Image (cartoon, rainbow, N blue to C red; front, top):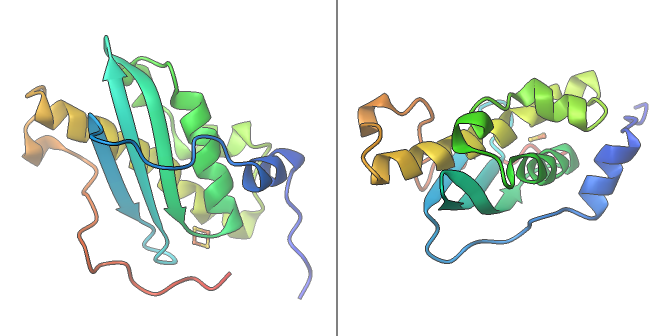
Amino acid sequence: MAGISYSKRVMDHFMNPRNVGEIESPDGYGKVGNPVCGDLMEIFIKVKEDRVEDIKFRTFGCASAIAVSSMVTEMAKGMRLEEAMKITRDDVADELGGLPPQKMHCSNLGADALHAAIEDYWIKTGKIRPEDAKHRQEQEGEEGESCGT
Ligand code: FES
């Protein structure tokens, strides 16, 4: 099988991911699963004056998913929550210099986990009702099978 060629930025974020880890008592937490491959991403945020003050991630996924997580946390850090809510999966892939077509689905998790964490914060602070959240949190035991790539 021919190798997949990744951009330099994807390789950089995969080899040296930014903002890896977790935040104790986060203000917002998002956990999403990728329906295509079953990989999982968690994002933790601290919020100050309506901005993403700190952000960390944990990703159980392929190289692209790790690069996407790293990039999305870097993009969102310091942003106003409303702005961070507008980051799309395509924005993240573009910032990474593109993803190979067969790995585009790996960009799904980053923006989704970020948005889930922001919605979690908004639910906790009463800005939105739980039923208005668009990003359903993954429940325990729904991990599915590993994509093996
Ligand atoms: Fe599962 Fe990339 S996120 S293969």
